[in-house]
Amino acid sequence: MVKAAARQPVPARRADAERNIAAILEAATRLLSADPAASVADIAKAAGVGRVTLYGHFPSREALVDAVLDHTVGLADAVLEDPALDKAPAPEAMAKLLHSSWEILDRHRRLFLAADRVLPTERIREHHDRPLRRVERLIARGRQDGDFRGDLPLPWLVTTFFSIIHSAAQERETGRLAADEVEQVLIKTMLSLLSPAAGSGPA
Amino acid sequence: MVKAAARQPVPARRADAERNIAAILEAATRLLSADPAASVADIAKAAGVGRVTLYGHFPSREALVDAVLDHTVGLADAVLEDPALDKAPAPEAMAKLLHSSWEILDRHRRLFLAADRVLPTERIREHHDRPLRRVERLIARGRQDGDFRGDLPLPWLVTTFFSIIHSAAQERETGRLAADEVEQVLIKTMLSLLSPAAGSGPA
Image: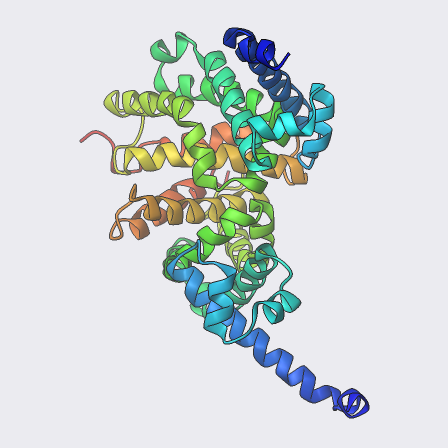
């Protein structure tokens, strides 16, 4: 028996593991999006796996939340793929990018709050590396075109995008910002920040 | 003996406890400011108390970091007390407030990073309630004077102050912002955000 088990083909085991991982990520995304305090036990139950199996793949709540964030940001980044971002005037493209980014973040707002409880901000930011590269490219183009300011470091302007949109998620959750005002507030805030400062425009 | 111990006057015990708490907070502030990953065991040792005593006052790392943050922000808020803030024109007062706030935050930057690892952002923000009320009063005055924009919600502008100055602490720690550029970057960023938008100034 032991020998037969040992001979079980590796691909089948791997397929099992991958199915379990996918089920856990799906359940974790769903439960944490509804309640950032959802327990690992409830996530295992919803995924139809035992806690031992879950902990075999994700040894801590932190590891699980980290994986869920990675998975979700990956999907979100694909949604942000939009050829118009490379063509429209930069301020208009920035408004579009904020609209799409907020739509995705708002849908997964509680997931972000769950991540914020167990992961350092810097780690959350690392997960956003790919979408933030889109932001960086767009701001760089706006600077070349003279639509955006050139007197603040580019990485700092990218950081303010990350920081402002994530602050908005928290403001929305605490009720300090109403659902129907967030998008306009984000667009106004970011465009004010990016406008060439008085006297710092193209010479 | 037991009876004598039981009769030990309560004030003496309370004085002991207060001395221990003060020593723990002092050691925790010092060690976490040097290394946000400093262990609770090392903090107890530096404070000259046993781990059992430390855990008696602060049952978890989270509780200890929370108390250190509360203590430090309280001291910082006293430093921000500056009559000039109520008299200088609002943009000038805002630059002063950013200068002083950054000076304090930079000194305790790693403490903030330690807090960011174990506390949700919303909790960190709650600790900043008192200094943020100064920011709020100043922005409100700038709006009345027509120096600051009135087309974005006041609580949102206060949030951007919190979020931008804390982002700067992270950028500084990761090396994305150089020590000598932070203050000017913060002042430019915040004043751009607060300037009356083109066409939205006093009618």
